[in-house]
Amino acid sequence: MNTSYDFDKITDRRNSDSVKWDVGENELPMWIADMDFPTAPSIIEAIKTRADHGIYGYSEVPSEWYDCYINWWKSRHDFEIKKDWLVYCTGVIPALSSTVRKLSTPAEKVLIQSPVYNMFYNSTLNNGRVIIDSPLLYNKETGEFNIDFEDLEKKLSDPQTTLMIVCNPHNPVGRIWTKDELAKIGELCYKHHVTVISDEIHCDITRPRKKYVPFASASDICRDISVTCIAPTKCFSIPGIQTSAIVIPNEGLRNRVVRAINTDEVAEPNTFSVCTAVAAFNEGGQWLDDLMVYIDANRHYCEDYVEKNIPDIKLIKADATYLLWVDCSDVTDNSAELQKFIREKTGLYVSSGTVYGGTGKYFLRINIACPRSLVEDGMARLKAGIEQYKQNIRINQ
Image 1 (tube, one colour):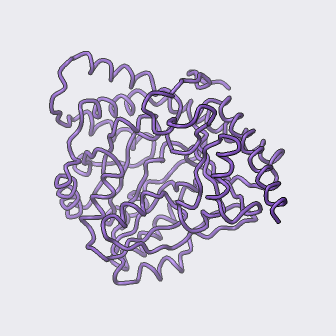
Image 2 (image 1 turned 60 degrees about the vertical axis):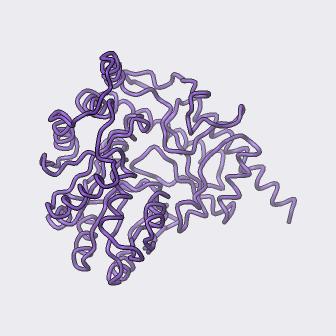
Image 3 (image 1 turned 30 degrees about the vertical axis):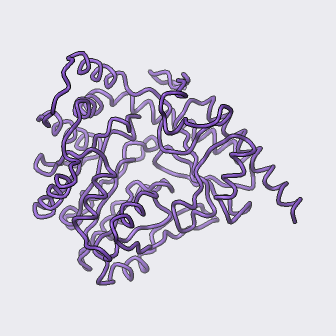
């Protein structure tokens, strides 16, 4: 495929303290949302330049950091962020956990839409709050996930529901929510006095010509009731750098969130976190554009392979993220068991959908942000694993 960067190159990540690659010798990890591509050259150069200085003292957040977010969101996503709205944080998960803790009280309810990123559960339950779920509606025939607005309003109307966490775009199902859908969520939350936390870390990994809509841009209401978490880490293959931003247009909410992250000591940058974000957003655009083309080609390969070779499963046609959401309901109603079996028999390590709640028990999640040769290996192992699993079921019946 025609890209300016060599995404086919395999980088050996074993013995590098990688969470993803801490696996057996013959195992292929395609689970955690961590890409296997070296980051953009501009980022590597920025880190080297900063490292060459030799002194790594306490860092401030300079004007360049604010500007890079403002310019990126304006040019890429048609959303004008004001400097006062931006707050530095060490990561989206610290931002999420601190905000949940500050904007709700113990035993209050936090609404999520399953199946959804498992850290939403952790950040809620570990803070002593209660999960209230408004599951996404799944149409198996069309492979589409949609919001059940009737159920959503019912759950939001509970006086104990004070927060809703939105995943935009949605992980793991890959939906890009429309402006109308987001505006309707905002209207319902405003009506029932619920604050929205929008996790938008996957926003820059979309299929070509697909655009995500920032929650805060969907309407004036959405802007005023929301806290949005954004970062370059997911899309530029730098999650270990630990850098993010929180966007809070409402001054009252912003003051509370600022107090929260400072209380939790997650509001100060490390030596490399600022220069990395600046280099990513100011100089990494072409690398990211080429990356999206490459990942889209990987997705097309997987769709074609599964259709021709593994007819018992179905890939959900996602518009965002580099994750496959795989319907295995014709094979099992226990994806945790299936995931374990496939890993034991083939060495392919993917994520069980059970950790994402709701209908996740019928699904597997597979990370395809890796060189094509690894994707091809992964699909072959998936085929072998599914076939062996089905054979094992027949033998034991």
